[in-house]
Length: 151
Image 1 (cartoon, rainbow, N blue to C red):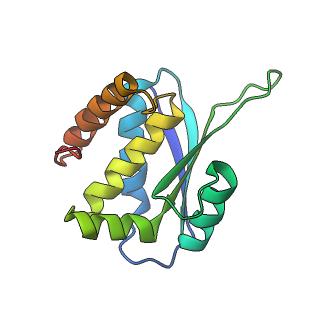
Image 2: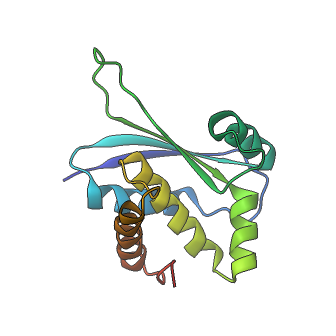
């Protein structure tokens, strides 16, 4: 059976961040659905200043975003199971959930699943790729007991 080992690092002061065990379960559910080998993942939960700095540095965007995914790129001579890192900006996630009327844990689960899928090679830049990714996200989110995040 495929296994995802997740380390959750919460350096945010934002209230309402889900328990690490929930984040680990959401990530594992997504990973097992699309992957074929064991892996290690880090999820770092940050506040807006860190989120803004990372988004500016890596995406050239001047504001914080909800989630960033950083796939690990193995040097050819090194064998490792590191999948990569997900950085979740807690204040942005909380604000989006509130503004959209989405339960906070449902939004967190969706964004963790979204981040894991990015690390597994899924993307949404091209319309057909977006459909594939959204279909997977919806299937995984529903299996976790949440409503379709796109409806």
